[in-house]
Length: 319
Image: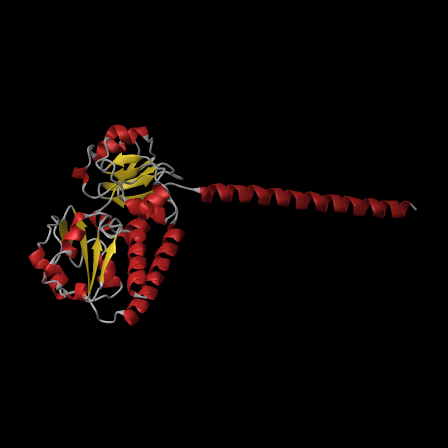
């Protein structure tokens, strides 16, 4: 009987010891897991900007990036203020930014301070801002884009992804965009073949014909493979000053399809409709002139702007 009790005691003690070890291991695992979570939650990132290396704080939330909101929104990030010139904003982004306050395009320092940013993103043309780079640095971490980033919305998404810990998201949205381009290109090649298309921004009664590299034109010609009209080809590369084209010159536009980008009620549209010169171009003769009442995404560059341009082209030409 005593022997049985000793054995029983030994078993109980062994089980107790085993339970103690398992519990301790569980606690260690929990503590290790918590430590790992903290390590991966967010950390500072250093990126190379136009003015040298910039350290971006972990988990930034209040971002000002005037005229580069497209790239932020593509990554699922809403800025604390949006680019504007007076009351003019980027209309195509308003569904996501309608409740976001405006900030003037040249970033007045008082307006920046009002938003208490923890990251300020500037374009490459630093002379266009009211304050100096050093002025903005005193308010928050400030990144000035090198020209190659400022001029390439894909690079903007990649850089923003790195700065904000959203590199996977950046890869995801860029891959989805490339698929969208491939699908649209296939549809358009079947419906319009080797026909040409041109875009004209109609504003204030004047006509601005897109060169093959201005605003959304690279999406149309380079990515979707739509042919460039000979007259547009002859214009060469776009210049900083975008000058209107005369009605007489427009008569040389032998394009099969023409997109007129104009706000509703724009007087220049009525002028074209009454012009014998305009009515003689191939697109007008064949009833292939299309009025687009939201010029904002056509006259911009960005992932969202490009997607909207593709949708408009497919909806219009790939019927």
